[in-house]
Image 1 (cartoon, one colour):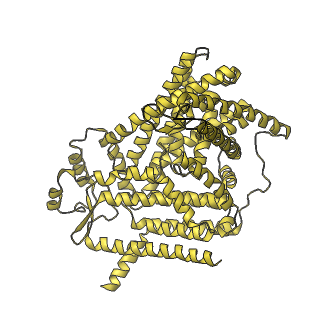
Image 2: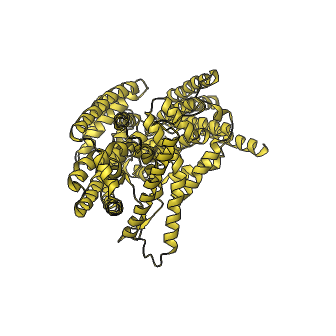
Image 3: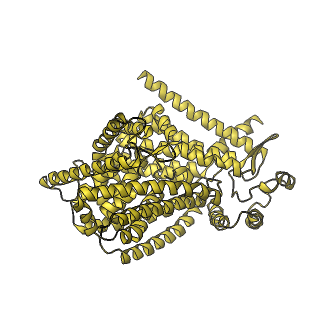
Length: 349
Length: 270
């Protein structure tokens, strides 16, 4: 479920970074305003608890495989949305830095996918109304399961959207969605069941812990609307600024046009898209005949993907290909040579 | 499970590596964070078929890792551990993308294979860069750098506390899990229900621990911030390194070095 840097384009990564930074700043302000410094060690230790909880595996019924808890919804229930968002963010930072789960650029996306949806949509809109004042066991269980499922589904959709928008992977939107959603439905159900059982266990053993969490909530309706508006503004602003910035790179403008168009067209049914795109492509292409001869195109048939933007080697020209290959190999050799040199030096030292 | 456990063991090793000394280690953490970010943005901003253009960045990363004295086997190992996800998604590229992009004589290479190779390459570079950052800087210094670069103090304190208790709690989780697995026969007691109760008691213990920590911190005058002894100070060497490296990264991004080199060499031969 973690996005990797390698799958992201800078515009998508930057936009989600901006959204996440806005959300973190807002949460940090809120948590500091609460003036409850008891929450500071609580957040830190609960963040570490998420890692510890992931050491405890359980068998998943019906599959024989085993899994572990993700913990986002549990944190939201125990800490409230703002503190939980910061805690999830810190967990993801540690995972990105030490576990190579996701990367630094993808961190914005990951915090947004795994933190924003459970904390600011699923928790206030589903868990809180369903669980009510926390007296009814069934309502708590139903709320936890539903919130976990919806939070994870939204996260999965966001992962798909970010990947497709970035355009590094050639996976079509529909195929990707069909692969992601059912898996995350199952994961969400298990996560929800575990979360519900843990919450009920805590409620039975130490009811005051949950009361404290519920009591510390600010009213949720208005700030959320404000936050969403702020995030949207931040996203639009950075989108504009970043694409302008990207256009100072050689192929940036065409690349970003292609991104935008790719998004619109991918949502439509698969048939006929390629033809339309090919038409667009010919109209805007800087080098109208850049691809290859028409004879070849026909031979390859319908499957030829025209929407591949400006490739690294704009013209399929054997000379350019050879030069690229020779240069690339030389650089690679140089890299390997350097690595060996350092290795030898260390062996001597 | 085994990956998380081994990753956790690696975590301690990363900490030890960060305590070593080299020219790269001695740089200001902020400089290293900024260089890493610039490196990542450059690598990620290549278009999806770029391969040759990415290789100078591999050269740069090798240089940094070599200078810092991090064992290259360690970095490669970690990159391989994290690779399956990117590979899984990348493997669909050759399936969906048949556009011919390169031609050597009669051999035509489809775009999908190029973009798969490009994806694997940028995956190695991005993961390697982050590993190099953390292995030469250490988590606490990265947190301080991020705080100085504008991260909210609450989040910085949160990260430091999380990191401090990570080791204690993860070991506790591992112990609990081991004890349960040893007492389980034919997979009994490993289900969701038993596991949730176990998690619940771990959670209660954790909450109690946080209360004790809070009291101890209050006794020592905690006011919501963690104070450190050595304030970060930029010196001339840091600024110079930052300028040179950023210029070099930009140059590598703008000029296709391998292509120029290739043209030069093929031109010589022709």
